[in-house]
Image (cartoon, rainbow, N blue to C red; front, side, top):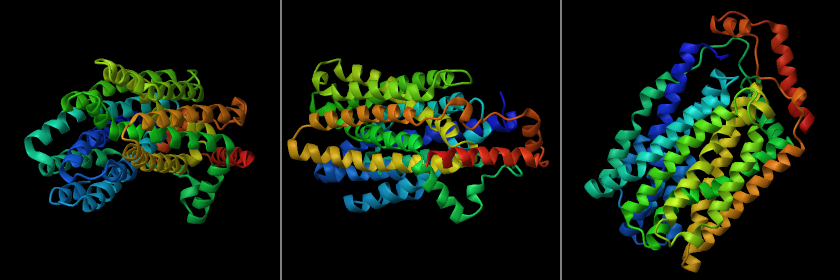
Amino acid sequence: MSTVGCGRAGWVLLAAFGIQFFTAVLVYGTGTIHLSLLDVFQRDDGITSVVGSLFVNLMSITGLVTSSFVNSLWLLMLTNGIISGIGNGLTLLPCPVSVGYSFRDHSGLAMGIMTAGVGIGMLVSGPLIQYLLDTYGLSGTYLMSAAIVSHVIPCGMLLKTPPKKNLTPAATKHRVKFFKTYIKLVKAPSFMFVLVGSILWNIAYAVIMIHLPNFVVQNGSSRSEASFLFTVIGIGTILSRLTVGLATGPKGLDPLLLNFGLTALMGAVIVTFPLYVTYPKGPMIFASLYGIYSGGLLVFTVPLCLEFVGMQHLNSALGLWYLLLGLGSLIGPPLAGLVFDLTGSFDYSYIFSGLFVLSASACSLFASVWRKPENETVTTRRVPEIWAAAENGSVVVQDHEVHMKEQSENLISNDI
């Protein structure tokens, strides 16, 4: 495996895994907490879901501790939604960037292992959050959540890649050039369709995350059964992310094709969920299939960014990708809650969410139309001697670095 320092890269992957796990416990517990917020504040579903939507969107200890003393839904939007959400966002975004730099040839497998931490966090989040709510109430749950998320601090201290002379992306050296890079990324047709698709499927992803417990409870399930669904989703997610990570390695399956297949199947499962949610085993069947089909989608972020924009612009591309994922998270839950408040049923919310995901699968097909042939894409392979030089802090061959920068710039410029 061609990595930047195998030992240090391993610690980076372990730290990223830990951060994904601890934050996932809270993120995927928002649906269970949402039920408690509805009981405590007795407000419309659409308004109440803004708290969880902001938290997932902005993705924190200070906000969670403050939330334990708050008795106003509007203040919770600030403390649990915005303050805690920003903390989570600052915590999560460096993970794929660090993993992408540390595992270039096997970015898919590394992302699969890292995001499996999300699956494990999801697996324990439902029962754990429900237990905390039953034992300590809403206020105590926020305090305990702050204690859980504090474990990302030592993980963050390990999340550091070796210094690389002459390998720092040019886009981060000058702010003007940095924003020009964002503009170029958006104007590249293939990458733009991938980004639009990520917004669409994440609308539905956030709806499931926040509204699934309420939906199944209204259709006859108990709260404990509703929270257990995230455990089932988590199991499917773990299997999916590890499998997809292995499948997208060197000479593996096409990540864009896999992205199309998974989003299409995910959309079909969501759009048909209202047809079988009332059956005793219906929610469990949905949770199993949804976990498998949705779990692998985040694995594609680094491999597709490396293919479409290259290592040169990896951090900018991932930052833009996660920004748009957050946009989907911000839109989805309040929109689903509004539809529920207007119609009195979540059926239409799930039908619309499924259609959004099916549209995301179509975006993957459109991205393939403007896709560069393999011999024109930016190579992410590196000569072992160059990486060894980077690890030792020695100077990289300048001609090679200039050549790679030109390849990356030409790829994006040709797409404009």
